[in-house]
Image (tube, rainbow, N blue to C red; front, top):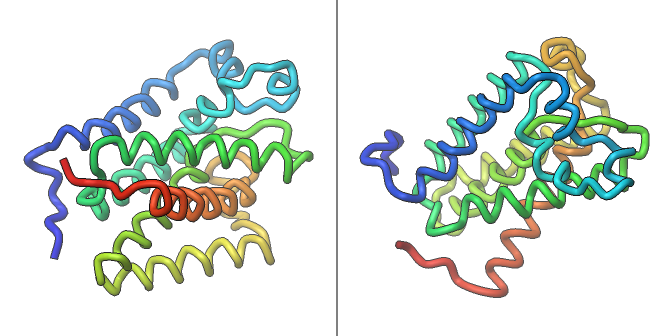
Length: 198
């Protein structure tokens, strides 16, 4: 049974903690900077590619921020034992790019997008697969749960209540691309190298 408390802190714990703090700081950006970093289709078409990464650290309101940070904290506590060396930042970077590019090409109606839920889905599915690899049977439940959730969203749409809470349409395609990103990351890392503990 893994210990859930994140103490004593390890060097690898600093990456999710840093992301947590960046999201909080980004929430207090003024409107000018917010617009500079959000996913904005027309700006991306003009070559402002940093938005593929920075948009995931922005949120529409405090409830959106709190939901994403709570999910990040939960996943950190649940799967921190799998974060070796640069695993977390590499996964987050790759997931952010895949989610943003996926949304850009598959959802042309989506002009603007912010939020971390897409990359959180990648982190979730990656962690569930790590559980399965370690013979932890809860991984199967986590994997089934996230796949059913995303499948339901694709068939029936997102919760209207959630959309009202975050004051924006829920970008369900970002969740789907997050799942795809997590799977791509697992397959590519298993194929190219074996991650070792510090």
